[in-house]
Image 1 (spheres, rainbow, N blue to C red):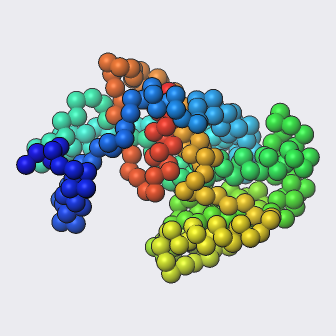
Image 2 (cartoon, helix red, strand yellow; image 1 turned 90 degrees about the vertical axis):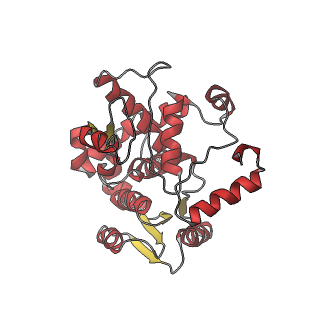
Image 3 (cartoon, one colour; image 1 turned 60 degrees about the horizontal axis):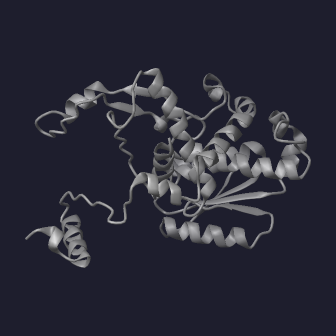
Length: 296
């Protein structure tokens, strides 16, 4: 029977049966539309990504001061792009048969400075924007052209210490929010689900972050964290499921990748497509990165 002739409900049941039986499946989004049409309908644009990138650059001198490990990238949160020819050979072997004809590159966001995961860029960016807004509104920074290293001064830290940052996380987003928030002086609280790794909890606590553990899953931690933050006027909640700021922070990765592809003399156009493979968690990070790539 041709699967295309089945109803959507029937197709879904076949897919779910295969998944339950550990059979590999492929699913294509039936709502997918032409990229040009999708871009026109989007509430976010390339100018939003440009604005996020400009903010990261404003914070770069402060990042170098707070996190010396960012010095080699001039205060930006970015990673190397490396060729993985041995992986390409393995994938093209008869056992797997991937038949990759072009170059296979790996963007090492697993090694991003400060928080060490793909979540680092987005999480740190959202803390940057929140801190920037508070600092300008309260006279700690005179304008967006001011010296952002002022945010490491005692006056700024004393002010941020009156404010809370909260997030629900299985670990990686919590690390990025927790480490950056604590470095600026915020009271930072990470609500972590039962599947979070102990070393991540220990690392956060070593940075002065409050970690609250839950018996339930990720969704439970987010729900509890959001409720506690909403009940506190001094608190700001980083919402992994709804945050445009996280999304834009992730999307900035595309601007950084474009420069690296150019440095490798890799042309990307309609005749030379770029295929990007993204392991997905909840989806915010790969969604943001994909959005940035599609915009560019």
